[in-house]
Structures are given as C-alpha cells and as structure tokens.
Length: 459
Ligand SMILES: Cc1ncc(COP(=O)(O)O)c(C=O)c1O
Image (tube, rainbow, N blue to C red; front, side):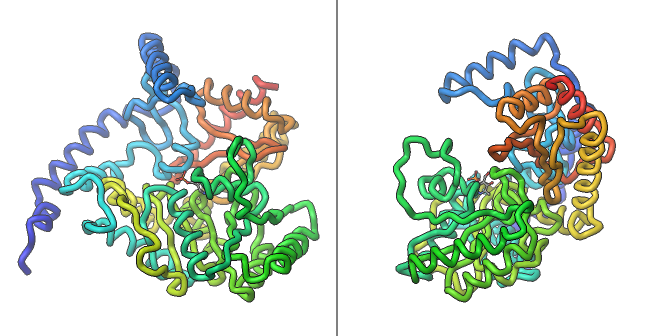
C-alpha cells in the first residue's frame, strides 16, 4: 500500500533509532539516581532563588520548595538543588509510571515529531483516534460506555459530563453530589466540590444537592444516603439531571465505599431517569482495573465517566444514550501530540504488563504498603498512624491526632527526610499517597522507614 509521508516518518528506522539513542543517552544520567539523597550545598541557594521567583511571579509560594531538575528514575525525582526525593504523590497523580520511564520518554519524543505541538477537535492527527479508541476498548469491560471526548484536564471533562447529562435530561438542572466531594476548579466544579476553603468569596448558584458519603462506622449509612436522595427527588421532581460520585473519595479523605452502598443509589437514579456520572479523574488506572467502577463491579449502572491525570490528558466517556447533540461540546485543544502519545503508552503499559487484576502489580503494591503501615501502627508508631487503607495505588492514613497542624508538620518532615506525600480530608486530616505503579518492594520499605522516622520526630 502507498504510504504518505507521515507514515514514512513513523516507520523510518533512522528516526526510531534516533529516538532510542536519545532515550538511552538520557537514561545513562537518570540511572545514576538510585535512592533518596540530600541537597548539594552548592545548589541550595540556586533552587531557593528559583522558588522565590515562582512565589513572586504567581503571587503565592510553592507548598513544597520543589523544582524538578528534569531527571528522575522510577519513584525518585531529582530537584534543582541536587537532592533526590521518593515521590509518592507524582504531581497529584499524573505520573503513574514514575519519573523518566523510558517508554514514556520515547512516546513523548514520537509525539514531538508530529507536525503540530497541540492537536484540536477540528484537525486531529492519529494519536487523537488511537488514545480515544484504546480508552473506549478498555473501558467497555463490564460497562455500557461507547464513546470518548478528549479534553486537556479533569475539570473540563467534568464540565462536559454535566452538560451531556443536562442536555439529555433537559430541562432538569440539579446535580446531586456527595459531602466532601472534589470535582475541580471551574466555577461549576467549585459548586460541586464540598470544601468552603476552595470557594471563599464565590457566590452560591444552588446547582448542587448534597447527600452523605458512606460511613463505615454507621450500619445505616446506605439507607440514610438513599433516603436523602429520595427526599431530594421528592422535593425537585424531574429537576435532577445527574447524580455524581467519586468511586473512592480523593480530596475528601481517601474513603472507600463497598458495592452494596452504590447499588441502591444507582438503581434508584436509573429508575428516575437521572444520569449516573462517576468522576474517576483520580481513581483512573489506580484501583486494580482501568476504572474503579470495574473494580467495584458497578459499571453497568453508570452513564458517564470522567478521567484525567494518569491519562496525561482528560476525557469524558459516555454511553450511546448520552451522546450529545452537535454543538454542545467542543473546545480548541484536545491535547498535545506528546501527551496523547504518552497517554497511549500509559494505557498500553498498564493493560499489557500485569498491573491490573486481583494478582496484579497494583494489588501487590497496595498489600505491601498497607501491611507496612499497619505494622508501624501496631509497633513503633502506635498512636501516630490511624486507619491506614485505601484502594490500589491510593493509600492514606490519619497521622497523630488528625489535626491540620500535625498533618502539615508530618508532611513537611517527610519532605525534609526525602519523601513526598500530600494531605486530604478534614477532621480528621489525613496523609495520602498516590503510589507510582512501578515502585519496587525495597522502595516501599525505604518509604516506610522515612514515614516511621518522621512521625517519631513530629511526636
Ligand atoms: C476527583 C477529581 N475530579 C476532578 C479533578 C480536577 O482535575 P484537574 O485538576 O485535571 O482539572 C480532580 C483533581 O484532583 C479530582 O481528584
């Protein structure tokens, strides 16, 4: 078959070799990073100055004095001051394959060779099709999802989800959302989000009706939430467009609910013609399957799913029924060519190399990490670690007394000692890890030692 020039570039042996050479040359540097290391005193002022410039230019300091040097290896990242940290938050979940993964660097380089840096919905290249198709193929297992629409972040994928639900169920307008939900940073997603600190000074638009999330300590939790949902439906008949939920709450405190909690809620929504939307922006690829609704086996009940972070892009997945009319969703950008190629590489790596499934790598990492935290909680860190747990690569615990001050002090001490984590939840304030899927057993042990040392320091 005749090949166009683009195909010839993609098949060129010289181009492929040049990419391989670049990856190999870069990895010669990256492979020198093998463990946590302190800053190089000669580079400390250099990084400090850069951090101050960031503070100045954006008008707010960084949470951590962190500026990546561009080098890393697996879970390790090198900073501008030459220090090496064990990165168990990876950009709040973007870098699921850690740092400097050769497959991802090669993919991004291939993407960088496309004729355009950014692709759009009007003039896509092949990566647009390949990533959307791979996503839909993998998401089809146990669900009714048929289509994918790309965006460049989770918030925009969520905006599209609400628009699709509202259009299909027009003129219904309300969104039901859980207490402690997080949905992103646009005006509407700030409404869906249940955290007053994230919307100080913003007006209320009263688009959102709240129900309780699952409470493992209350045996009537499911009945209570179902009753609240029924009360809203009675109060606003035919005016609720969508029921939204995170299959596992992220910012809300890394709380997990069982299948039995969701089933009656989702069945009731379906009876009432309310769209069921799962926000999987954070859970995507992390719970042992591609989607947490697959892990929880509730896929058949869901109409719309949003994903981002690990995909290196955003996307809204939806059933045939919720396919919107032309004109409702569009937008200039669908993603950079490098990010789309990298997204394909993430999906291929995770789906082809035994990461998913009950005996998969993700499940083993979860077990090793949580058992390690549990052992600390019962041993040297008694009273300093509470409720360790989570799902897959999303792991959290409550430090000390669960106060904000102690949580922040613990995080800063982890950081000083070479480990990067982040907070979540409120009352109690928790510490969360978005563990990269490539972490090795000895690196989990290294993380646990830093956690132990830091918690004892902050006692
Ligand atoms: C559950 C959830 N939804 C939406 C978002 C927003 O995604 P983004 O920051 O890519 O806009 C996030 C980000 O943390 C999230 O965790």
